[in-house]
Image 1 (cartoon, rainbow, N blue to C red):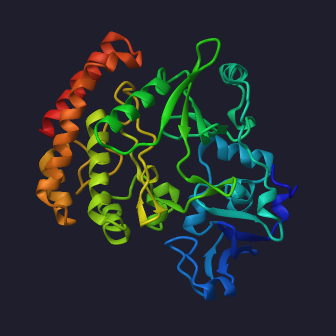
Image 2 (image 1 turned 30 degrees about the horizontal axis):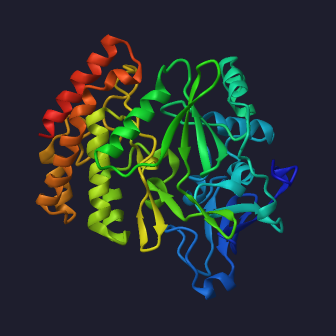
Image 3 (image 1 turned 60 degrees about the vertical axis):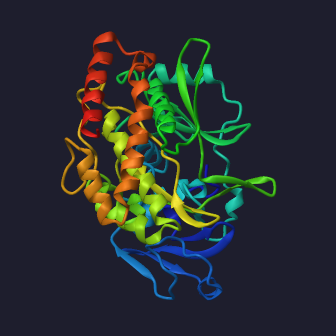
Length: 397
């Protein structure tokens, strides 16, 4: 819980970049405004975001909407509804909703009421929560928004909550009953992606005493420094393109690839990682690779792609999208090798490099097709997945 009891009454918020007080957000009767502090601009420290370059001039958005970078820090789905209810406000009161989660956002930005110590924000991780009780509450239909830190992945409808493990901060994900074996699905295809040369975040399945399963996902936007966990600068595809969350299914791969080429420390490496992620997701039927599921983060050499995350196959669920989430040269279906060669060739990736990436993916993915029954689906569903993945692989041959 944020130490400020009535966030609706807060009109000014401090914005921290790591431990540095960088600027402020101000809401007025008709707009929300972000401005850097003069001392931060003069220090020439990194900007809050690529869409908010250092400047003495304010960024003003008329209405109740936040600048796009901050809007993309808000949770979605049931988590957002829960924040609305607990803070007795409306869904369009983005300033209040951001304050409710601003002390623990993805990346290294923190937003707290003006004058509040950002380190006083309560840690929402649960190092020793009762897994069996958590599953029981979820199975009993308890409102997920009442569980600390729970949010909903809109497309996959997985429930996610922070957890602190011996290895560091993590996210614990639960699959809903209406999408069976979703935890096993993500664990399988995340592991398969890693075996196929796609850098992925570390995941593992955990079970409760009753056989319920959840997926533990290591947070890659946190690192250990001087005895504490700190945030790593990170922006997803919506933030990088200065787009609002509602555009996450409309941003073309062209826009994201342009940013990877122009702003990555090693553009060819970054583009080949994007290639592998797009190709793998198409082959396995991941219809949820949208703009918020690709990100860049600040590394020792500069901005580079994060490990891949949220990789599933939507093929078992016929009511979910089977086409690609984003369009590649106007195409979201029947993706073939020639399309990737043409697309990435325009961004300077040599044909030999594209073929090498795809050949490795093809070779490594073949034995996994015979392991699909490990996920747990019935024979008919598994065979349908096997046929479709096989067909998509042929198009990459």
